[in-house]
Image (tube, rainbow, N blue to C red):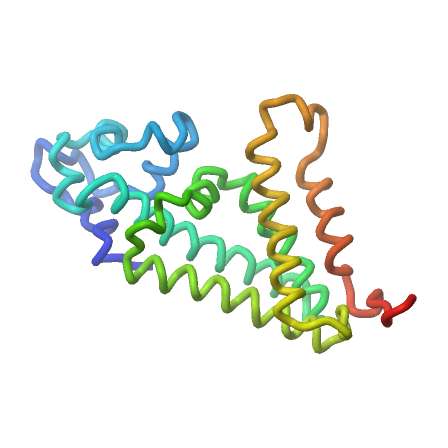
Length: 219
C-alpha cells in the first residue's frame, strides 16, 4: 500500500546522489530489521539512516521523530497482519468457524515470522500520537476480526454467548499467546518447543477447527 502521508514511499526515491545509491530502499522493512536486532529502544532516525545508507538528516525529512517512525511502521504492520489473516481464512475454505480458527493461528504465525512488525503493533508508544493512517489501519484490522468472529458465532461457535464476548476472548487468546511467546522465548520456558504447533493447539481450544465440532451449551 502507498503511505505517502507517512513518508514511507518517499525514502524509496533518491534524495540526492550522496543520500541514496539506488531505488531499492524500503524504510518500514529496514526499521523492522533494526527492531529485530536491537529492540524498539534501538530504533531511531539516525539508526534508520545508518541501516539504509543515507545521510543522518534524510529520514528527518519524512518523519518528525521516533514516534512518527514507529507509527508508520505500525501502520504497515497492521496492514500486513490484516492481509495475512485474510489469506489464511481464504485458504481455510468457506466454513466460517474454520476460517476464524485459521485467522487465530495466522496471528500467532505472523508474530513468529514477523516479530519486529508484531512488536510495533503491540508497542504502547505507537498510540500516544497515532496518525489517521494508523487509526484507520488498526480499525480495519479489528473490523476484519470482528466480522469473522460474528460469522463463526452465527455458524454455531458458542452460539449461546454474545459475539463481543467471543471476539474479545478469542482475540486475547491469539494475541496473548503471541506476546507470551515473544517475551518468554529467551527465558528457557519454551526450550525445545514447537511454538507454532503449541499456539495452534491453544487456538483449537478456543475456536474449533470446523463448525461440525461446535458443541451446544451443556455438552
